[in-house]
Structure formats: C-alpha cells, structure tokens
Length: 396
Image (cartoon, rainbow, N blue to C red):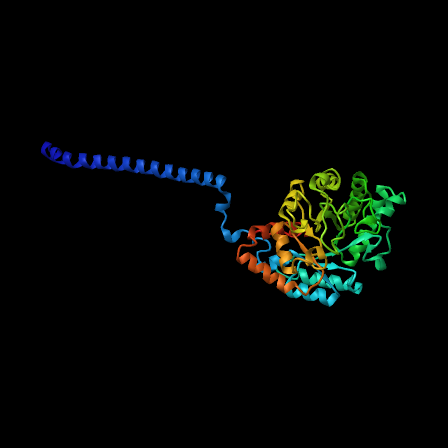
C-alpha cells in the first residue's frame, strides 16, 4: 500500500474509532444510570412499604369490615331492649325490627324460655351481621325474682347477709343460679344492687339492698357479680348513682337523692370500689341528683353519664325502664325518653313493651338525620354493645 493510500485511509479510520469510543462511553453511562434508577426504585419501595404498609396491599385483598351490612335503623335497633309478652311477641320484634335485646318481665309467659327462646336467638344471628340477641331479666332474689318458678327461690340480698352467708357462699349461689339461667337462654341479669340503705325493708329498695353499710354492699354485691360472671351471665350493677337514700319510689313518681357531695361519701363508694374490677355493666336510675343532674333524671342526664365514665367505667350503660315508671312517663313519651337517654350517654335504652318500637326507631332515625343524635354517639354506644355481646367490632 502506497504512502498516499495510507494517508488517504487515516481520516476514515480515526473518526470511526473515535465514534466507537464515544458510543461505548455513552453505553457505560447509560448502564450506570439505569442501575442507579433501579436501585433507587427498590430503595424507595422499601421505604414506602415500611412507612405505609397498607398501601402495598390492594384493597380488594383486605378482609371485609365486620358488620358493615348494618343499616342506620339496624344500628339503632341494637341500642334498644324491650319487654316481651311471649315467644311470638319476641320473635316478631327480633325478626321484623332487628331489636338487639329483649327483657323477660313478671308478665312474660315463661313457656318461651329454653328451646323456644333459643330458636328466637337463632333468628337474630341468622343475618349477615350475625349479632347475638341479648336476653335480660330482673333476678335479684327475694321479692324481685322473675324466674323462681323455674330455677327456685333465693333469699333477698339483705336476708342473705342476715342469715350469716359469707361472700364466698353468696358467690357460689349466684354462680349456680347463673348456670340455670344460661340453660334457659338468658344472657343478662339486672343484678346485683349497689344501692345502700337500711331503711324500710318494704320500700322501693329495702331488702333488695345488701346493707346500709357501703363496705358490706361492696363485699357482697361484688361476690354476687363474680358468681354471675363465673356462671356465664352478664351482671348489671344498679341503680347508679344510688337509689338507697332517694325520696321515694321512681315507679310511682319523681324522686330526688341527697346532694352529690353526700353521695360521694356513701352511695357512690361501692361503684368506686367495684368499677375498676370490670365485673358488671351498670344501670342508671331515674333519680334527680342535686349538684349533678341539673334537675333532670339521672337516666336522661349527660352529667350523670359523664360522672360514671369519670369513675373509669368503660362498659355498657343501661337505662332503667322508660315506659312504666312515672318518674319518666309523667313527663315524656317513650320515643322522646329513649332519644334523650341516648343523647345523654346511655348505650341501651330499656322499656317493657314492644308496641312503641316502630315509633322509637322512626324518632331516632329522624334525630340522626337532623343531627340531634350524632352518628358518633350512635357508633360509640354500638361499639360497647357489640363488645358486651362478644360480637366483632363495627369496622366501618
């Protein structure tokens, strides 16, 4: 090859080599950039997963929230407990209105207990939400004993103490009776009383109270509640904040208690001692309490429920009967009384007939729509009720 030929090729070879070198460099840079991007992407995904784990799981894969099938009316129905006449009455109110609780009273046909009641309880859970039915009774012993024909008699609380029964014996007695009630389909006993009184044994409270000494009430009522719990029942302390020194009988008219300052050193002592033990739910009575309820009945008073919560109570607050006790019925129709109680802080409103259920639910639905009864209050109460029943939380 001549010198001129070699000279003529150099301009061609050298630019090609340079181009190839540049392309190689570009390729190396590109590889580095891609690698860095991939590493950053992985690192970023790791950080996002650590900070927001829920965002990495598609919503479709998450389990459905519990009880989201409940309509507003069904939610409200869970906050009601109504007295029933017989199995047909109970079945109708559970099937047609999804009422969350029924009450066995002195007027109830006890033939509905056992198998008929279990069939009604099956109707309650045969829904998408599957929330158990609460079945309650006043079974205190003595003169307030709705089931003595089927589980036998028990001495009144005051008589148990007078007979020399020890707290341990009272606990065992309550456990045995609870087991008998569970066999019948009962889930809640509105007992024992924490009322403190040494007054008229035939009065509104009288021998239904264990003693006029708060310490004795605490010891024996606590034992009774433990026995009921061991036997499989939900116990309910009553009548908060204390009916023992009230001016009369709230079944027959309005009553008031001594001022709150006096209750603090007497009637409220059993609650202060027993609430931290989480042995029972609480029923709020219809007494006006000077210095606490602003002239209203405790069952309809926001400050009364606030007082209960301030004492550490985190469970279900029931009202006393809203339909046949004149302390309430002389002033309010049932739908208004139920609404006022739920607004004030009750979790379950109790009354003793099924006739008013449609009107009550209509009134409550309207109250929610008008923001008289905030949904937050409904959901708060419902959460406690579901917990008491052992049902899953609302979840939505």
